[in-house]
Image (cartoon, rainbow, N blue to C red; front, side, top):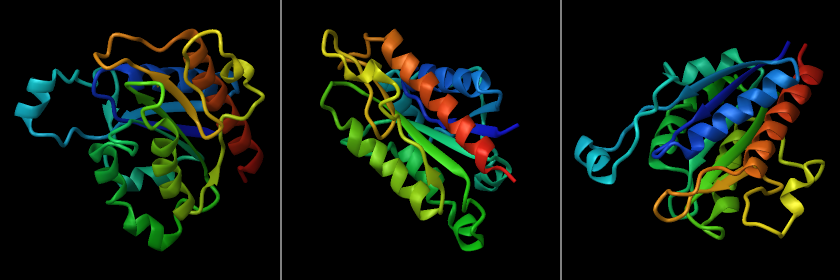
Amino acid sequence: MARILVLYYSSYGHTAQMAEAVAEGVRDAGGEAVIRHVAETAPQEVVEAAGFQKMEGHTCIGGPDELAEYDGIVVGTPTRYGRMTSQMASFWDQTGGLWQKGALIGKVGAAFTSTASQHGGQETTLWSVLNNLLHMGMTVVGLDYGFDGQMGVDEVHGGSPYGATTIAAGDGSRQPSEIDLSGARYLGKRVAQTAAKLHV
């Protein structure tokens, strides 16, 4: 059984919802899903002024060394100007020791994100995550076109060949749609299936 970490940061709950859907997909494929979030690094006054939600219901990851315990890692972060949040970047900036040891080489990785607008930098944010995974020597899985939900144009929705996505609207009022959540489930399933095939 593949053991998959779903590691995320979420300011307003959208990315947390996507993390839950990714985990569902992992479990659907017969894998074990563990959900963790990275620590909040913004000053408390910023958190309060911006109305950030607490990442309740999931445990904060203990540190970078925990990454080596998993067969696959799916990373989720909202976008900040077309790249991952500083909270997620701060976590990955601490993984130099894992890189030196080659601790993540051959493990499976993937990404998901949330943006305020349809063209708010989803793909560049996904790439900002995937760059880290590739430097770690991980085997990257995208949201392939086997998930055809990303192909429709009848409604606004997320989805990219680089990973699962959702759109929150500028005021955060839009919640992940069923298409968005289905894409996240599909991604989780594909990561678990790939990790199971590569697992020795």
